[in-house]
Length: 196
Image (cartoon, rainbow, N blue to C red; front, top):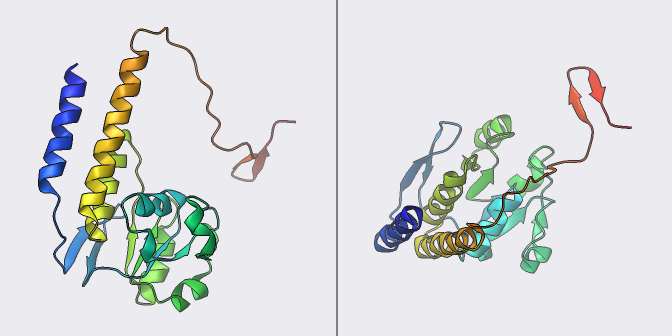
């Protein structure tokens, strides 16, 4: 019950703090870089499906001019230019789109952020690594894109749904779960480990 109260309280705090973003805005990304947006971004490129989906969910999907090849939700992504992936980006295509903000995955894109920044693009490297960071990143994306109200509403909705789910299973027996992230073989050094 205490968890539910704190989640609700967190939602109320978020609701009261939602307002228009003031620019210039400086944020620190997960790579430890200070990223400054001089004005509200109008042309955004994302190199991670979660960034794409979050922007649509908070009402900033219309700002997207380029997305990674794996972004396929919501259906409005179908008409947006594909720019490769975080691992194999088409840098020339990204630059040609003239984005005023590029969102990359910090866990795999430190060099990509450096490369894109070196050609004069504003790049934010950030990906949630924990449960709470999911909500934090939504708020950050909302602030950067001047969609704080949309971000707040999304966080409150997600917290409510998670609380309802938690209540629905609280008295059920615990079960073990297997979650496969990637079925492809894993490489370690020069050795290829594969299940045959």
